[in-house]
Length: 118
Length: 110
Image (cartoon, rainbow over all chains, first blue to last red; front, top):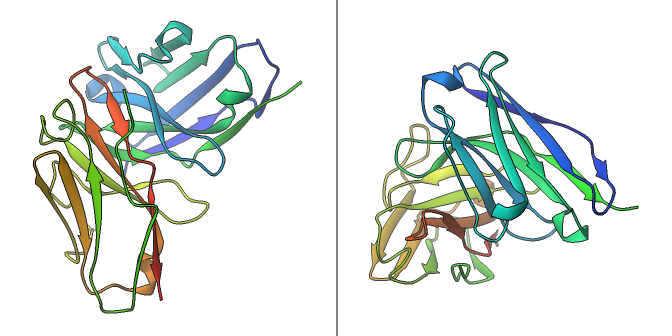
């Protein structure tokens, strides 16, 4: 059974960098699929952030692309997200996900709340 | 890109059917058979219910069905049950090589 678990600071100061890691169990991320991130501001809807292929190629939401870095650490079976220059608008529950074979998010982490505040 | 359009809420009595619409454009819903639906009970992570417009993952009850006509996709829940009460989000792949979600629809079981 594929399981994903997010980890990282729950509080980030404005203008600083948000960093999250997703640890995958039950599947080797180097074996295939895209792995990515989706966020949900409190009380609001879902927003796709971006994804990384097992080979390392990435694609991302055009509205966030300039501030994003998504990377893989296959030795630890993890992938990571960095968002620079955060503001209060980046406050959200961040989910890590696996993209199935046809553009769908078939496995999700439980989500982690990141608040941006001084 | 703009979000997809969904009704804020729908409701029905146990045993009834409800349908949630999801309207996009020819650049997303209308252009690709890559529409998915996700169920999110309060305080939990979303769960994939339908993919590729009308396909159910293993374990999803056949009370859930999906369809698409033009730029509008739909999720129908037949034989509504109390456990179906949740927020439902549609998602589509887009011509910009990205994904767009709808704002979510709250399903209430009366």
